[in-house]
Structures are given as C-alpha cells and as structure tokens.
Image 1 (cartoon, rainbow, N blue to C red):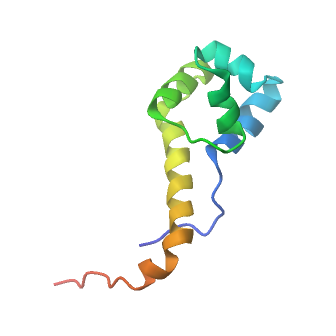
Image 2 (image 1 turned 180 degrees about the vertical axis):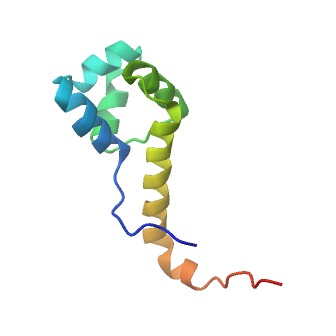
Length: 99
C-alpha cells in the first residue's frame, strides 16, 4: 500500500483559496447560489465539515467542474487523516504473499 507523504489538504481550503477568494465571494453568497444553508459552506471553508455528494453536485454545477473532483478531494483528505491515526495498526498488518 502506497500513500502519498504530502500533507492532508481539506477540500474547504481548496474551495476557500482557489475559488472563493479569487472571486471575492463569501461563503454565504456561494450558499445562496447553491440553494443551501450558509452554515454548510461556512463550515466547509473553516474545515469543520466535509464535502458530501449533495454539496459536490452543487459545487460542480456552479463552478463547471465535476462532482468527482470535489469528492476526490474529500476522499484524499479522509485517507491521509486516517493513515495518521492508524499508522501503527497498519504497520502490523502483513501483506498477502503472492502464490
């Protein structure tokens, strides 16, 4: 199993720095465009909440990306965060030997 050594980057950081800041858009303004509660985007950009399929679909539509883009960011963050917690346990698992 190979996992990148790069730090875990929360998708909220990407949303904040690469999308909202260049557009000078607040999380609440984006939420209005997406027809969702403002607190959802606020919690994502403050890295307290992850991206769900629902949010990924809405972000993809608004920013002309794909839902997979947003969910892949979330999955990468989740995996890297889990590795940090499970590192010792994972080290004790023996890999399957080729037959």
